[in-house]
Length: 147
Image (cartoon, rainbow, N blue to C red; front, side, top):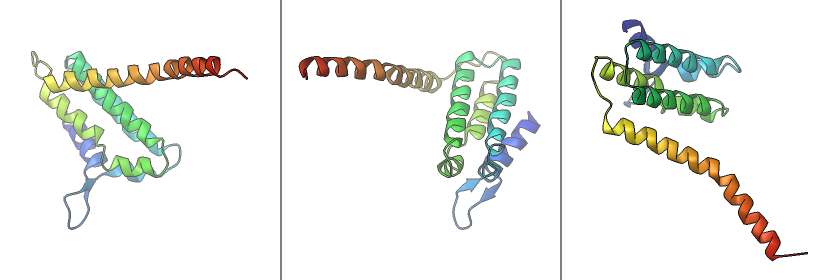
């Protein structure tokens, strides 16, 4: 756990912008390396999730940790914006907090964890249904406006 804490700090909070409380780590810096840079956070997330599994962290909390990591990885795919987002979306720090909070046997997930996971699942369902809704609308529009 100490090693994971240390790496989480290095990736997300190692540096402070002078005169502010804004912190960032090596993640956005390493992210500047094309192709390789965006692998650091997903690899670290894998280690954190493996530790969460070993410590029997509730599955719902593991799902929240996975969603944090996926959002981080998706943001990292966007050139420049992804590097800036790495300074704000601190998935490594959040996942470590979740791991430390729930690593004790018998610690249940919080209501916030459930709301977050179910909210993300609802958004994913809406995104998945959007093409179907658009297709139905397009077919009806074409049927109503024959050439």
